[in-house]
Image (cartoon, rainbow, N blue to C red):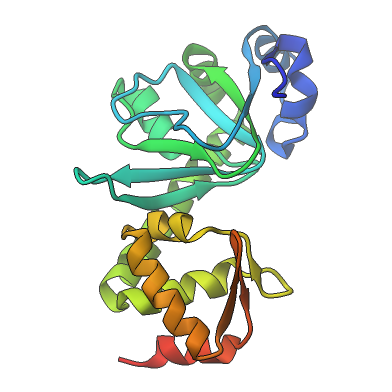
Length: 229
């Protein structure tokens, strides 16, 4: 069962687990105690929809958020992930420029998010160098991530993009805890296409499929696929 949202003083320990909030000035900490809230998000339904008004900034405390686009035919495509200690640049842009959110967001697994109301975050940004720094770093990180995604889309065929995804998401033991539907959503294609490509990978001995996960058996074979034109 999900915990109820924690506000103010109850939320501070979770927020302070993120390094950027540990060394704030006393006045900033007092403001945070009055306004911050921590919320648990379960995977499944979107927690932000395209067109949603943004009332504040949010930071991932634990877990991971996925920001994605949705085509008219219902096909999803991952834009970027937000990991612990990171904030969402789309939300900050919406907040500072009075725009509505331009994408969708859902939790990849059980995820805790700290919500900081807009006026409070603007005040913290004005007075705290650490908040200014994390905002700028979030912007630069997003630019590099989106550029990498664009380069991959233009440079790789779909089978190569799937091979690259498997290599990047594999654990030290070679396991990827993703369903074929999740892979399809990340790549902006359908589960049927991913299933066909996975059958090819299995037949070649590169991977082994299990319920809800994949095991890389021959990483070199996947890497070789990336090298082909």
